Image 1 (spheres, rainbow, N blue to C red):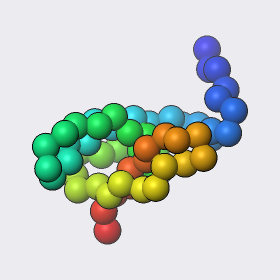
Image 2: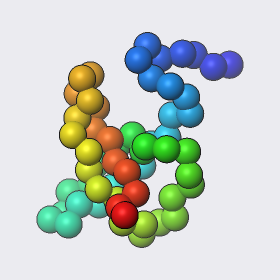
Image 3: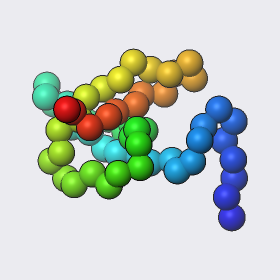
Length: 58
């Protein structure tokens, strides 16, 4: 079963991200590529709903 989320386009990907200064956050991952553990990412500005997003660092 798929439940649509208003304002979100599937697929929905989540990632635990360890920040350089210690804390770990759960964030939505941009794109649909699988991320390996240890892949550097960058935090994106919060979206209008206040959700934190990450993208692969390039």
